[in-house]
Length: 602
Image (tube, rainbow, N blue to C red; front, top):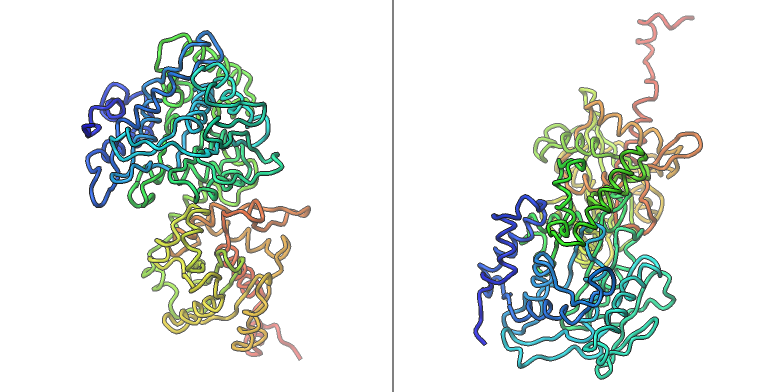
């Protein structure tokens, strides 16, 4: 079969309409970037640096598959599912890109966001059935050599049992009503399997007793925004080593409590990938399609609704029904003035994440101030070299991030802050995947120190402080630390520096209240200088404020095992806590000073 460049395929036609044609005004920034990525990839396909090609036969295969899947509800019930142009793009790109030699599918992960009512469950149900019945592997443009997936395993995963049953339930109904599928599959209430190739398809949630997913070939995570943790996502992600071309597929709208939902964290990473695909997704195997109203769009302007709701681009009965539903929710939300209803409208219909309901230590305004307070390393050194300081450390689990910090009280009344991270070298790549930040890049630029082996060598924290003394003349007056996991390092430092120079800081609201509040106040007053560090910014954005009954505060992660780490910031506040004590203590005057002030008498 003759190979094609893909430049005239329906996926490319759609991408051109989005990037430079009639659909551009109907699409958000992120959809435009996703389409441009496809067009750019077509120009470099099959090269040594980019060993992927777009196989039109594989793209068309998934599109044709849906013609065997009947609609199961609404006025079109019983009719074949005909994918819309934007669905053809999403699925055609996901399944059409393959390795130029082996035909292995390029994309092993996807992230799809769009508004409620835009056929998410129906689409994913069809994909579940495709992976059970029709997923194949063959060298590019050689479908006669197709090999079917044996013992396919499909997991319909969601936050709870009822939501998981939604995708599985639709797949079950579609399969039962399709003669082509029904003769290939046995579909029961809670499990289905292929009559000749075996395998299984089932709903999966945190409520499932046996969540061991084995070796899934397709793992769909439905409405990821509702997940409080990444447990279900990680289950799928960590189970993909046994298949040649597995696919982890996320489908979602936006949600609440943005900063502390794993979905929002994943989306932030996805947006970085769309902006810089070659540096943020080095393997080039993550398909991303985000549809939302843009920053600056007014949700009261109904013309922008189409960006989050691609169904509205059509003029059929379903598009008109969906538009009517959205307008009804819009009127109800804004006429009521109920913040909760407005939030639901913005998240579900406009696909805009809403701020956290928990107490974030830094809001967006403070993070903006923190960025403005940062100065380059050389400029920071001029301010702090040779001056007295307090150092602090906060040791994480031996396989996780450890933090250190240094704080100076400058002669002009400002405070200067420097933060450093430490991570075991052999775990850095793993933590890039779990934490969704660029540890290896940060290490190359000196913001993180990688210690040899599989566990963090905490002696490198001491070395970092000693290096500051040796190379920059730091006059370290005291080292202040969180006692958790820190006994051995504290003993070593006390032996080297003296008992009174190494101080444990009580990790309580009362013990950290002054430092935690003052750090923020200094930033608001423009009295804080921070050495530039993306690690420091990330930690500040992760911190949660915990308040006791007396109004005292300290910092915490939202969950004990959260990957949104704060260790370098916590280390810095340990140092600031004791530095403030030193500064605020009344200075003892000499006898001559007392006599001169008239405060000394016989």
